[in-house]
Length: 309
Image (cartoon, rainbow, N blue to C red; front, side):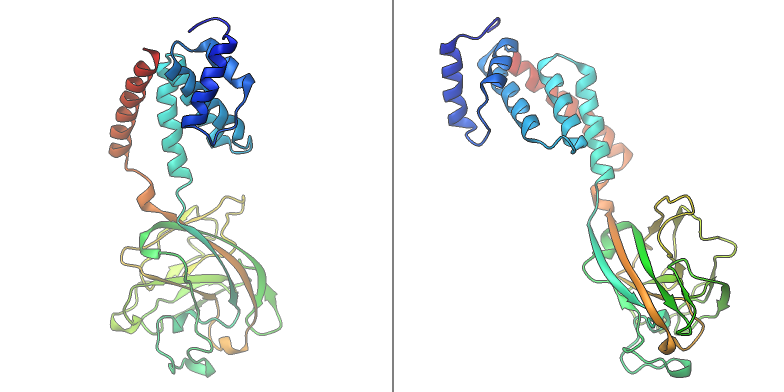
């Protein structure tokens, strides 16, 4: 079926599309283009589908736009490079768009991370009590299925209801462990977090302290242990690169609070915080990606040969 399409062929194909692809918009322009390039009815139908999907897809969706273009070239233009490119683009898209969800919360300045996982009625020195000064438990994210988390935070908090600092905090200070949760050296009033498993944290001893004077706040990735308090800040490096916080094995809960020494009860302000969970299950391992890629190329060529008959 080459050359310009006859009106009779256009009419027959239009009827065929109504039967099998009624939800796609009918376009005489697309239909004429595809009928000139095809060698069989099935090839023309495949062309029309890809062109119609492309037309219906928003041009701002670069991933969809590029994938459909390459898939069309793979099927219709006998291009091995295009078939391989489809696989690569899809795999990159799966990896970069593998997100389990986003949760938005407000972390109050009085949220004491050392009351994380402790039962109601637990007290801390100088007036803090659970649940009044307990840290914020993050719900709505499947922590144990996440590979890593990313954060963004805005706002300000005060350790004394007078001096306010942004999510990255103010001056450096140190404090020790409490309730089986590690101490740390960090900037006062900064946004901080701690991962726990399902147990009360006092059941085993605290891990070592993290020192963010040594580690700095400008890290690209951080891998805290269970019950090891860690700095979050605004979730970005000094050059505005999003930081990655890897979830420790066995973690089932995440608590957020602010950095202080004692008496969170006197604190004020807080941080509007977005937490994004990046799902490890959605990102194939390298070996799996290779096997999938080879299979996809073979599948694409098998179907292309059917279309070209």
